[in-house]
Image (tube, rainbow, N blue to C red):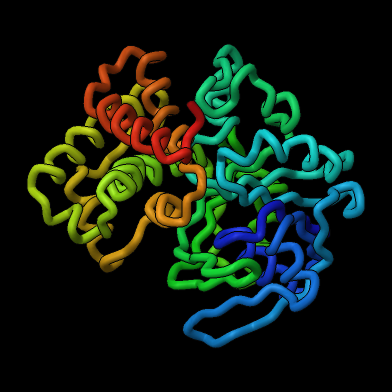
Length: 324
């Protein structure tokens, strides 16, 4: 399979390296220090299994990479708008888009019903949907932990699961083909007949811990051990679960059960806390603003989600990590 990965960070780097090592024709769109490092020395992956180096065709100009069979979009959500015109150069007649990203994606609400408008919080004016059309998209939910300690280096901590499905539901031949390619590359690739629900479930679990960690500078154990914060997280998750019921993504687990899963992962630093400490833009819109917007659209009151959004947004704006 001819594959281009857009964004060689913690998620995209691992996918690119593994698919290249499995024999797929992998190229990547990168920039700055990552571009220079991977071009000169290859893409390094470190894990408990050791250290590997993958050599890729890497460029900052998508026109040099040509049309692909599959484009894996592994960017932080705030970067996608600027990258969309470049991604368009990677599209051939039958190219598939696989966004391996956090939070609510641009395709989420339009996939639920023909009359649903794109969310302004993640796709203002529907520009992303126009550039990256729903018909090309396969939904993807990432369930592994990795980090990018320096440009061109990925550290894989644990997990290998990738869930793939048609945005409007069902398991198609193209879903099976992408799952097969990912499985060949060492991932636990799962074909889902309801990937919207899978995406909402993951969001429900991390939409609170991420911003709370960025606000407090705390790792997961300290957050979960604080009874006042824990009660606030439970109320916030309750609102998100109520929204899920309205949009066809019901949650069958309790908030407490979900947080016990988080405890089993150890005392970890969330991705938003990592971004905050590094001075990178926060993925607040995809993780929280979109949920607040959907709540207003479907008539679910969200006072706790609104409080979390307002507090985190103000902090991020003061630090230059979120647009004014």
